[in-house]
Image (cartoon, rainbow, N blue to C red):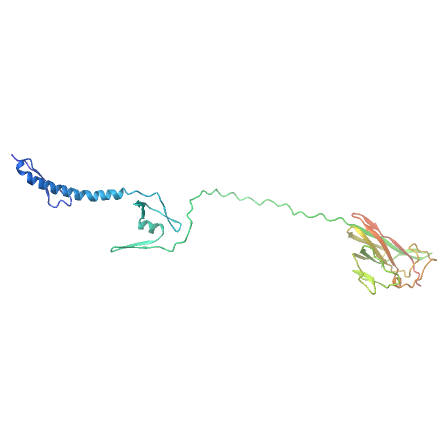
Length: 287
């Protein structure tokens, strides 16, 4: 009694080939032919599966791809020492467009700028705005302490009245020593004084005119050696001595004192001190 098992492989590649199992020696040749056909169909099914398995098993490279410093997202395949990136990943990472046609893939990328890829860094939270600290006022050099000059000027009026204020007397202060000979014509302005031949011989540091009481004052004078020059408003002529003597007068026609008696007083100005420059011009002898 013969018993046959007949099956048909539904997979593509068997192509109407039946696998027949024969259990009797009489059908051995036919069984061998059918087994060979079955094995060939099985190979056809196995080869694509193995190829797909090899493709899926292709090692993914840990390498990252940068184009102009821009990171390409997606898988990087390392096959036989070569690296492969999908065009779709290129289009997405580089903001390009991709189109598919008959046997053609068109990839369009915008113009790429060169950047340097930097790993994301943790930025510290911004510090709370602090109000600017008050700045100390700039240091200024302490002012140099100065000295002053003041005085009362008088002249001899007569024996009955005595002295009177020499109001209107002009006063100059010049640096250092100053002297004008009696045979030179004296001239002076608010800024300089000298002779008719050299009217700016001395520069005036300070200038003043005595008030109705004969008083004058010169302020804020740096310490040092000075000469105070005074031209009387009420007396003329030259005295023989600084301590005048009415009967011991000299020639009152000297050019320097013809417009007003001129006196010179040397002063040493000290910081924080006031020098007294009071003066009595004596009598008017040019009458």
